[in-house]
Image (cartoon, rainbow, N blue to C red; front, side, top):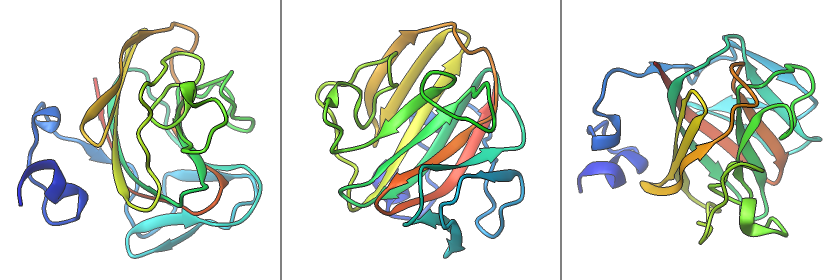
Length: 190
């Protein structure tokens, strides 16, 4: 087994073409909440190198640092009914929404799948929508100026979407419903 499938299954850190442009810096150490602030009341815990939640209202883990131009890669596991996402360039650390940040959605049962799993809500549509439930998935996000891209398990779901509303801000990992787990949160600033 080689390449991205081996990485997704935790069988090694093999370089792939999308990752071969320079070193990534871990944002989550797999052991603590260092570098992150909790917003909301989800029951965030850390176990086996992953941060997870399975109860509470919509909540976030918000990075202490802000970022402008970057490549981000995150491994996420969600249950079939989960609502989650990765918010970037958040302009308000205490009230995070899809209108004051860019939301890369992970929501397989979203009533309108146009902005479901793999989409950037209100910016980059996805069709067909991939499914995330029940397995570890790799999300790769590029944010460079007003251009954005998203790859979900190696398949481009958003390519060259453009929007200049939010210039920089922290990264936020969302718990909305179901079971949500994050691991290997890594960034390469441009």
